[in-house]
Amino acid sequence: MALFWDLFILLSLGYLGGQVADRLKLPPLIGMIGVGMALGPHLLDWFTPAIGGLSEEIRMLALLIILFRAGLGLDKHKILSQGSVAIRLGFLPAVIEASVVAVATRLIFGWPWLSAWLLGWIVCAASPAVIVPMMLYLKSKGYGTDKGIPDLILAGGTMSDATAVTLFGITLAWITGGSPTGAWTLQLATVPVQVIGGVLVGFVGAHVTRLISRSNWVSGKTQELTIAFSVGLAVLFGSEVLPYSGFLAVMIMGFVLLETAPAMARRLRVAYEKVWAVAQIFLFVLIGALVDLDVVATAGARGLAIVLIALVVGRWLGIFASTWRSRLTLGERVFMVIGDMAKATVQAAIGGIPLAAGVAHGETMLAIAVLSILVTAPLGAWGTKFLAPRMLERGHVDPTRVSVEKDYRFLVGIDGTEVSHLALLRAAAIARESDAELIILHVETPRSPGVEYLDRALSAVSDLDHRLEVRGGNPVEEIVSLADRANADYIFLGKSNRSGPAQFMVGSIAQHVLERTEVPVILVDQNSMPS
Image 1 (tube, rainbow, N blue to C red):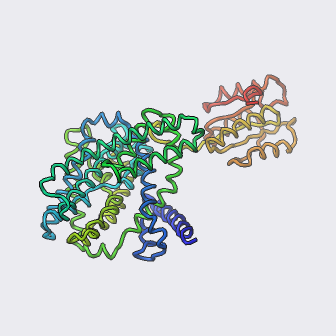
Image 2 (image 1 turned 45 degrees about the horizontal axis):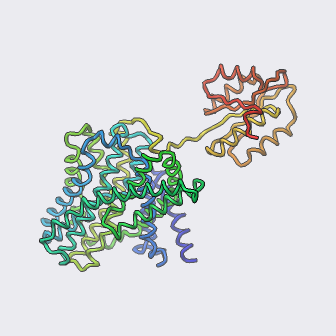
Image 3 (image 1 turned 90 degrees about the vertical axis):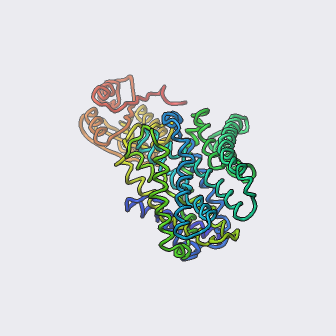
């Protein structure tokens, strides 16, 4: 029961924290991280050891979802249009920022060069947990999409993580004596191996998913999602056994599915977005729980200075070097500095390794890693949302790369005839699939039936958001007027071949509506409904 109580507290308060941040015009993840800090072991300590033991696994599952979503939204044409920018973004920002941190650490703390470089590789990695949802948000709004800015940050940032983590491992091995200095070239060669391996494994994972999903073993969207998630888990955790970037592999898997099976990719994108609504709460609350303010305090002003130098000098130089001679404007490059600065996932994963390995200054390294999360995650998330409308051009939103949410509203005219009831049933069936609202219009005439038929109509849509409008007057004028005022997306009318004053939805009425409204009109008769 303790674990279930933890999950309840995490979800409910994490959701509440996200909503509070949203009301304050801040990204919800900031509120979720704040809740995690408050509930974590370093402040209120509300979580039991059970949730602490599962924390890393839960965070990895949430990362799987968000990285897969990132791959399902990549646009290869926009990335290729920028030439080698994406490739340079994969290593230059990390290498330059790590170099700046190493020099600053050497000057400020006086550490040996290897220790200074080790801290540099910890600090320089960008966080997919923060950057991916923010870039998908930009794509859904169209900010920077014409030049592929969100795609560049997504692709470059993931490869950058592979560079930082690999070089961190090499430096740590040198410090602990596990790797002879003469073998540094062999160790360095693992960087392209990580990237190329991630691409290949992601490619294979996508085709395995397609192959299984097309077999007789799989039927329906739920089973398709299960297969994709299972293969994604194998791809992500396989990097613990084989030398490739698991983060990059998962994103490539989603990208290959998008290119080779776009219909499946669209279904998976919709499903993963629904799952992400819950997964993001777990991810950001648990990241916040890792923040120990007492440890942060040990870094002091000097630690804060290193984090700020890394951002102001290292990240700026890295982004500007990567985008040199590109088609991006100065404002777009400045935005990329902010959009690519957030740190969280990698720092949480590797920040405590030097301390556990007995490396000198390991506690200070952990403190600066945590401090970098505390400073850059909120700043990057808020800066992305605030600056995007001011620095990026709003372009085309590609519905094949990102789901575009829309609240649909259907207007249905009923008059008591069977054919108008069929129109209501057809509108209701489509509304259930699209989660649309129904506006049911009845125009009273001297020959209108009694209220019993209205009760029948409302009972048929009781599971949907709906409202009934009862009017008097000319049916055509009432339909056209209400459709305009209610911003209806579609008008559903029954079509009958009979005529007469008792018929509200007759052919002549429908014809007049078609001539007077720009709202699409769907006509339903007995032959339109499935038997």
